[in-house]
Image (cartoon, rainbow, N blue to C red; front, side):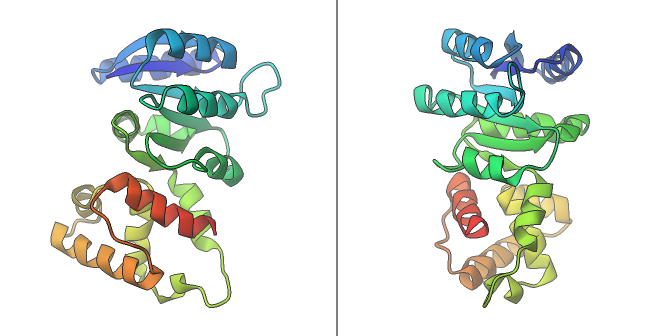
Length: 214
């Protein structure tokens, strides 16, 4: 899998590149700002771009703007955006046009090397990843007649992992239960939230996130 890494901080940029290379991924280019990122993604057409959300010159949302352009111009390139803080509005903007090949993680997750590499691979393969802290905030909202209230504690755990992009097998391993048990929870969640069940992971994530964002 081919990757472009963009971050204006040299230590973070080089560190992420080294982690990915050690895991067997090919880092084809490093970028220091949004324009540099776009130029190198257009040239190399990687499977995934790992992008800092705040880069020069304004350090506001240059990475997010670049991610939107990449998705529009090169739909075959996944985009994994890294953020220093939980910024739910940015995650919502990133996912506005669909969840396929999109990820949003806190930078702290890079330290969880195996999970981070798995997230990069998942996004590069067209899947979705959303940071657990963002999902927790979404799940923490309360609305009148909120169907989330009908979920059991275990179903809420499964919903959170589903929104993060995990497959049923991965959820079963994380929760130390059988895959069949996870399938039952997923079926119950879709029924309680009135969502259409589908076997395609990114569509499941998109459906769940559409509900959580509402």
